[in-house]
Image (cartoon, rainbow, N blue to C red; front, side, top):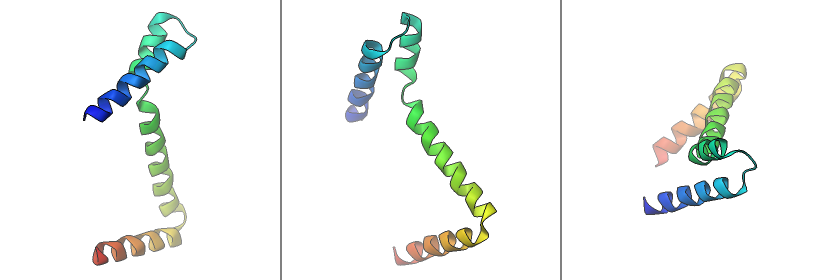
Length: 73
């Protein structure tokens, strides 16, 4: 947990120091910067889910791989 807090504090400091904006915008950006990676993960997850629907063969391969992994783990 301490590593996460140090990383978060470093991101806040970098955003406050390097962002070219007024103080309120810098403050909001520095506090919300972790949402970027979360948004990326959400986007990739939704695209994979859509590909499973759009391309059923991919869904079969992914389901087979997941089942094999689950059975062997």
